[in-house]
Image (cartoon, rainbow, N blue to C red; front, side):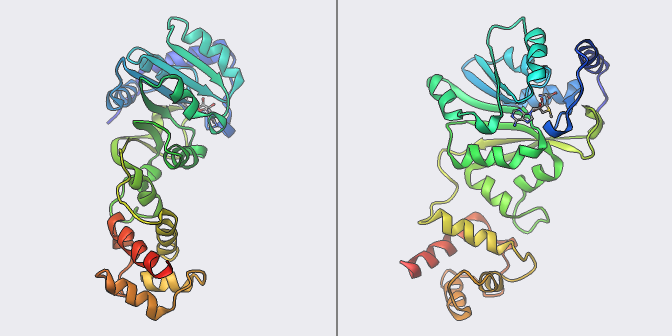
Length: 290
Ligand code: SAM
């Protein structure tokens, strides 16, 4: 059971009132008001003085201040310009915070990493939920030199990212994230830990970025195309998903032959397969196309 921490709650209320700040739904503004959850994010992110932390959406600076106490530097990217004067006030005691008033999707993260080439780059955020998947996949797919991503996301999305084969949450997102990272669900966070209270529950997830992707395959695009098709009709066999898609370019017999060749029955369903299995299957099709 998580109790609302009165201090963080009243502190947030005082700042909101002082600046007559109005929450903007379109920016996913749900500020964290629970100290216990704040501490959980900080401890799981394992920040030290050799780290440069990029924070996405600092809001009024609650998480930013705690990160800045531990990190070498915090680069906080906030889209809402009305929050900038508030941040300058709430974070005035720190000299290791840079505030960038920009949309994170337009910020060159590689450029920031280059500036701090001798430091470890970590991402920490209570994410605005509308950009969760785009920003995480952008960081991973472009292989920005980031060591870990510790973020608050919608609970359902956290479970999908961390899901294992044959579970109900397992799907293309699980495989895309786990190709690049080792996921770990740090905490479940109920909706009453935020101001204003959102309509969904949340969870903190830590993604530790792997030095090398989880599997080696000849053609990543082909592997992820197969994965996408495999989950397009969840309850169908992989054979039917690939064949029914109409754009896979192999007959039923040829697909069966390839699946059997790498040790799978033609009745196998995508939801039971792991990344290594999809890697093997993709390589077998790759050989046929070559
Ligand atoms: N970090 C604060 C906290 O934990 O209380 C605020 C978190 S709130 C869920 C999300 C924050 O992200 C808001 O401050 C919002 O204005 C900001 N934001 C929304 N979209 C953004 C974007 N595309 N780029 C940067 N910041 C964004």
